[in-house]
Image 1 (tube, one colour):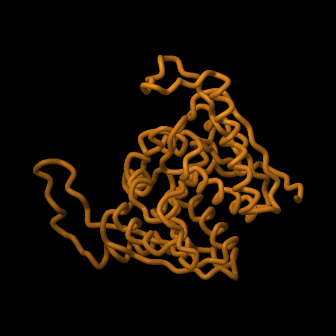
Image 2 (cartoon, rainbow, N blue to C red):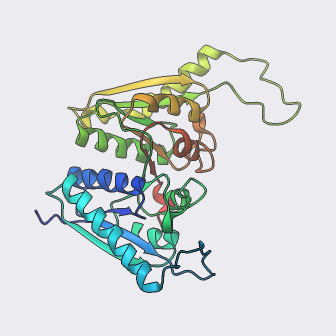
Length: 296
């Protein structure tokens, strides 16, 4: 295998089929980025009595570690098969999944997780490991869910914020590596009524508002064609809630990219809002990119 260098792509596993899917995606990402792959299993020793099934002997500490080693061996085989040119390392790290993975993000180029699992990643849904990693991690987080459509585009949500700019850059790099088109989507809507009794503005020009919103999108992607001359770049305006709009775009995309928070048409783009909605409902993998100010 080629000795690849630099910050690794890290994938968290738990032995579930979905975590093996994440390993294959992570291996492909490592190959595209010319990075090594690091496979991590968080081993948390039981602190409360483990429920015992009648007739089944509960696992001892040694058995738990042996099972974890089996998970790692299986994951390494899957990674090597998916990307034989990638240098693969694997480690059992003692601790709860969230702090273990957050520690890994400090020295990772990308963290890859499945959207659900079992074992030490029990209930790996949005309210658990995936969202906490995307909320507090120090690198982009790729959540493997749905189906990646290989011939589809990379889609990025745009709102004109600083973190949206970072998400656009991440998405452009991903599209370039994959040889895919990039579709920049700006979702917008009419001024919201936020309090009981609020009224719409007396003077409201939908055409003017649409033109202003389109300007936000065009300014956000300005310069991309110069930086990525071979990138097939498209942009779309869409009226409606950002979560719904991007979920619809995910039906034929190979990747959806969003920032962890924003403004404008993506008001409240926190992990409790659009990003979380996508991790629950998108029909393809979702990458969450954090702002520079969130990485300290």
